[in-house]
Length: 280
Image (cartoon, rainbow, N blue to C red; front, top):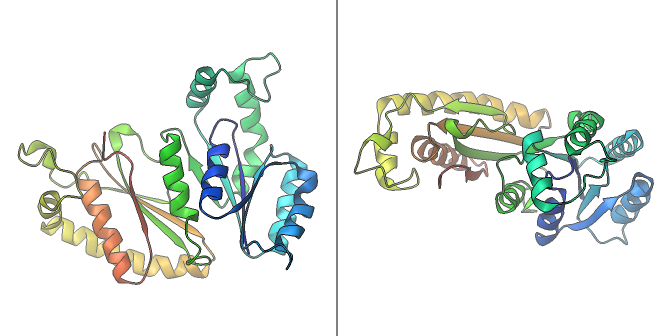
């Protein structure tokens, strides 16, 4: 039995998360009030329930809800708390574009309502196993990110590794554990014949990877990960995000991320790969 509790800011994508989990075989209960958490969990985990993956999307997250979730965590060995957030500016724009009213807006304005909710949800964020910032993610990209973490049942119980690329000029991702800067490598963008390609193309991979600086970097990263990954697993870490950045997120970081993922697969890990800014 695997249970994922979905919490987070209003407008940050809880409904998208519910749909993504449901589309990939999860039994999902949306807008679950605190009072029903124990009963629903009891039914879901019973022999007659017949569910092996259950998603509980929380309606708010107050002190009572926190207590109920922590009680579940004590009972279940495979419970994950996912927290979705976004910047104030992005949440305001989303509410303005949809004309929806923020659930905490009692006349004080959406900005004040968001601030109040953020303060109220600080304990939930602190207790989360996985935090995803959706500021730069449209619903399609958010679904991709969730599928990368929750899409397959075969590797339940193993640490899930996500290897991603990004462009520094578009902002550093906030929901990863390790960030590596690839801007020390020559930039294919300044080579007219290479500029149209991306780091997934052999032309760019040859240019980036067949350099002594790159080989030294990757070999030392291999040695670091050889020590870290087993230690993380032993400590019970469920998710690990590795992010590689270059200026625009199209060439160097993509090629390096693809190579790191390949090396991890050769060692028996099952990383998921995503490239946030490859199409920008």
